[in-house]
Length: 319
Image (cartoon, rainbow, N blue to C red; front, side, top):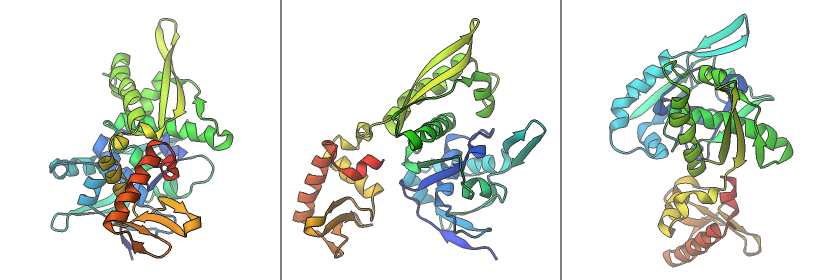
């Protein structure tokens, strides 16, 4: 019997992908990739083998910052991609595996929900995470404007994590990536010239990753003869204070209410206080579950905002 699980995804939920899945060949649109990544962030090790995940479309819209009703008209196209476009994993020269992302997807318009069952072939690449795998918080990709740019973020984040997890090095130089391998892995059409790849993917990713994610990069191009043959990336930790939620107090409070529900925002052991934000957006002390009144909350928000601008609010350093 299938187990059904409804989850309200949060920006701090983590996406985990085993390296073979990360390196696989596939092409997905921006919306399809954000949808499947959101579902992946809902997967937990203890889930049943035939788990069905229920996602409210309004939750997905809020999470991804989507406006209007275009998501409903584009939803079926995204599901068609995920049900028809295979993932190809090459195990060696004589051995490859193809499978789909979803085994089934049922949209119930009356409830505004999407019921999704993952392909059984994909589950080991999400749950059996030994050794080399990718991990990142879902919020990092939600503002990126291209499926190619999302995949580039994942590739660079994985390589950065591999080195940083062992050395705590904040700057990581990647091995040169062959442009033909890059094109194949990302399923970039042959009609795309190198200039198209640079202008439409790499140049845009340079800006978007620095503005919206926890890493940024520099790139140089290595020639073989007169043609570009390799991409040379240097990846750096990105200061989260570049994010625009600190532009004013209102944006800061909105950001905190959206991303830090029931998380420890600030702790003062001397006063027996662990400050958190309720699902309704109210500040409360986790130690006694008492909500702050309006005056006390305003004073606390002022202090939190000042600490954030001064780079002294520890919870933001884990973005």
